[in-house]
Length: 475
Image (cartoon, rainbow, N blue to C red; front, top):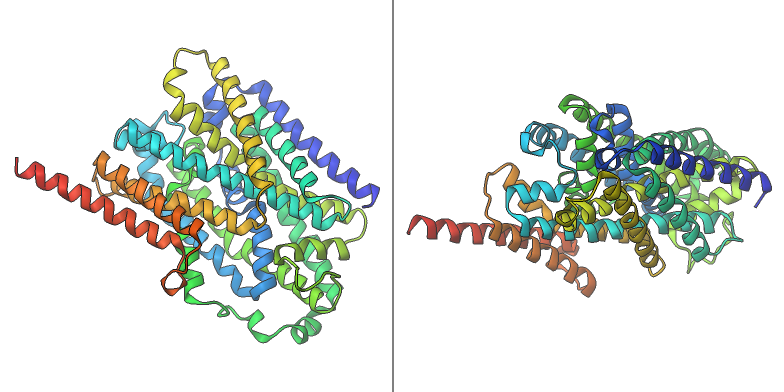
């Protein structure tokens, strides 16, 4: 590892910590810490949304898909585009125009309003567990990037470094630090892809003729996937735009309905096609380099998610490597910090909020920082036990979707507000997905456990709601 690369990387990390210090001095209470003062513009929100949603985990995961299946891996983020634009049309106007939501910070507060406190607590638990796992996936993504790029750096040491940096500036600065650093981080990542990663890797492997001759034709097709792949990505990723705590925080942080909708359109466009094709293209180039023997790794143990960082460490010269690694770590931090804020908000507002009402704003903010620190440490401990970034991310998404989607849609759009029905849907839906995922059983049509979790959640909600309605009509 060249000294210049290390210097560039350290300067970048110090700058991120500096942003945290700045906002720590300027945050005045929970409105600033959790929803950025509710007055942030659409471009900052939009770039923060896409940075959070794509982030380091999907950056590494997309590289792995490009390595394994080529350009068709880009369809994974097409579901993100659909989710973002559907949320802009249907969800944002409802959330921002409901007067009772005006001073809310979290999604479980909405659930509590729609149903009752017991259901709100269940929603807070599901959000907390989901975002804890998601934070862990981002830290693991950063560690894989670091250890794959810098052979001298052990994976677990890299995990600890990533965890400390992400947790410290998030603890200090809150959502304002998260959103403004997300903007910077996303621009750095985008520029790194466009001006460094793609062109340098393309010319290093020998250009188009070599790429075409090295890989089979299906790697350049958009049809090199099964219908189950698209269905599994769709049922997991698209609904997260309706149940994601980080996304509700940004809806609350935006200036108004128009600003929030514009932010979601921006985010969807940057997810697909821009980020999707750049990510899988880099993974495809890593596969070319591997097939040509440029990546000296035993083929039997090569992790597809490690192909891209190893490629970059091989092809990028000193100085440029530091810039590109800063770009990738930008993506990792931009998601990890948002997930930390979401999980911290669950604890502070939804779980322990009733015992904190008599505390001063300053005391609440300090306790929020303590919660954020504790969650970061726990997420790091989980990451140390995992190996696959994309798998951990999708498990976390699936648990939240299967537990929360049906009650949210029923309460916000169908006006079916039965606490017992909502609680049944949450427990059974989330439980089925988690149980099937842990058991690792073979499912019909090779569908994701989330399919069955959502179906069970819907069936449970409708059954309990129907029974209650029948009883009420026959009293």
